[in-house]
Image (cartoon, rainbow, N blue to C red; front, side, top):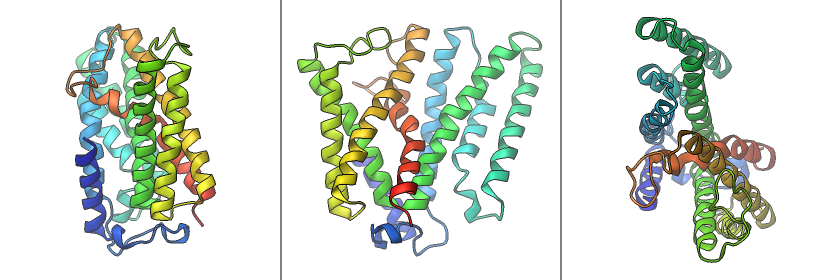
Length: 282
């Protein structure tokens, strides 16, 4: 999965010229093509659809209905907020407001047509949650790619996922002290320490190899996003525990579902954009 994801992302950067852009802070933005991140945006859209189907199954176990056609379209439109200004002249804020407004109207119409007055607040509420969770959060992943470049988005995702791997490996082998037994009994402080150490090493390698940031800033980045990644995993664990399911799906052997893989990058994405905006850009 790592090889495939990296290959697709690098291919996307090669096609739009991002590979030729230095990773120095003052050269993050742009590429030598006017339209950037198309393949990356398509990849995000596919992951959103797969994750939404799994989230729909979790919701169904609580007798909640996710309106897949409406929520999928709205989530993808929200996720691509940073993409469309390359094609049409519209303020991202105005675009965001209109997508949100029409998404809510679409949900209400779908509820009326299919379920009438049954569980209006519950159904529309869970659909709004799915659109924000999958759509809005994914939008920040694409925003990092478009506003800061290829290597920063790869650094962000690799740091987050390596922290998950470090936490799982060391926590499984040596973990004894649990830090969230009510939500995720398998998580331990030993695993958390390993997550931070692994993420800091990966962040340092990316920072040094692609001149993204100073080494000490990379260590801070790694530590902070190891913690945020574990928080993102706990958020999804809350949903699974409420639905009384161990995994969100079975599409990925050894991991569970797509939602089990993207949960930590989703929550960490807004913080990644904020970090790059404050400490890297400009």
